[in-house]
Length: 199
Image 1 (cartoon, rainbow, N blue to C red):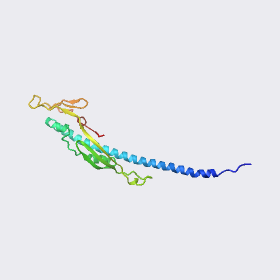
Image 2 (image 1 turned 30 degrees about the vertical axis):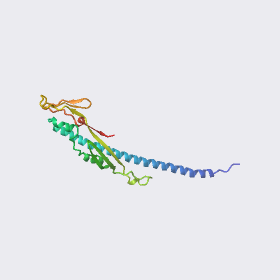
Image 3 (image 1 turned 90 degrees about the vertical axis):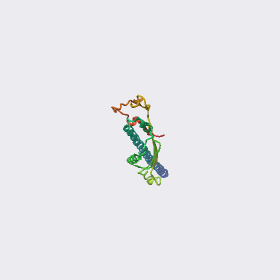
């Protein structure tokens, strides 16, 4: 005599199965939402870093260009090489680079050879199981500094070397002896100044 097949156990297991699958799907969507938010935040930080560096590099290039323009007058070197003659007007580059990274600048603050830039992503986090993310935009900020790298000994007034351009010495033991008659091989902007993100 054969026993009747039991269907009760299978019927009880089915709701549990549905609950487990539903829970797994919820977790998958939750991880997706977290991933979307993280990617959006990373995009904002990338845009902020690029914007701050671009603003600082623009000012560095201006300083280096002014130094080249006045290279025959060492009395003007110090203000340029220590950055005190800098005109901190590089924020236009911050706006440009933020836009290239699908973001916009909320604020660009220059001060003492330093730019601090606040940005916001143009794209929202996007729709997810977390309410309100479709209108959520990530924000980030970054600071970049311009660090002078070079020094020189100014010529002594009345000395025989007064008409000789001083040696300019930069980090990593680089130096340039400049010939007023043949001004070739001048230091590049990156030789004169370092630009990097602030900690």
